[in-house]
Image 1 (cartoon, rainbow, N blue to C red):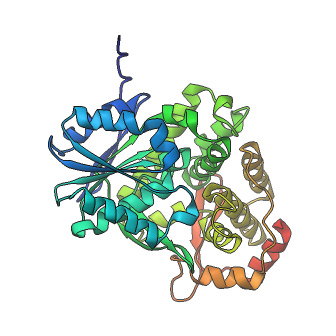
Image 2: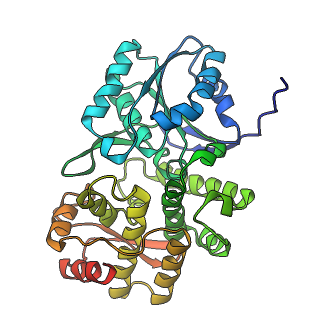
Length: 372
């Protein structure tokens, strides 16, 4: 059988001082995973635990294992159930069980094949197994490709809030194969587009304008392949720049939480799984925009432009009916609270945001009523 020549890799560096690593992007990139891991310093004979969910493992597990085994890796597999509601310490324990069964050593690695849930849990398992082993992120959802797989944030949820249990643990490399988006459900694709829109609002007005020029953002078939490639590259590069400047979210990196403050509350109070993460982020962006308009920070016109893009992506535009008191209580449990004050990322223009901790509870209640 004639084998096709692999597509050329586009490599985006994440230039961290202590742990720099590459983001590789190429159609058909899964076939190059074993070679790329070897280039990253993981040699032949290394034990690897592949972590995925049933659907993704069924689509791509054989291909990934073949690439790893072809490069000399010794591969075991652990499959965990999909869904945000599975992102728990109990599921994390299943990955630890897989690491024990595979006899992973300090020179071993975990490969996360899937979306943000798999990536977060596998990354946290790697951070905590033997006090830290290598992790390689292979995202298969749009949201994970442009956001979750990059930057080293790992963790699981607590009943009191999202990602309250976790660690920073940078990957050895990230491999993005856009071809895996072909098997992504449309709803998941739309959810990922919320994070792309986010990058436009927080720092890339040209990206925002490109999105405005697209006919359809709600499905893969509606995007020109060149536009998709550009969106992936620009979003990944934007995340890489911010992470390199602020690895552990001491300042600048907090702007990546645009839409996430209220979005996490929506996810938590609605019950994990009711809204996908990107859907909740889109609602959080609308709420942050409304707070910014009411505070005189940005214009009604820019809020309308943001709303139009979120609508073009087929994302929800109305908040669910939530108890305002419960929302305010949930916000106080957010990781971004400092000295008891909730920090919001608020837009001031397309391409610029500010971090504010002076948003009054009465204004939050007002916005919840307006968007419900």
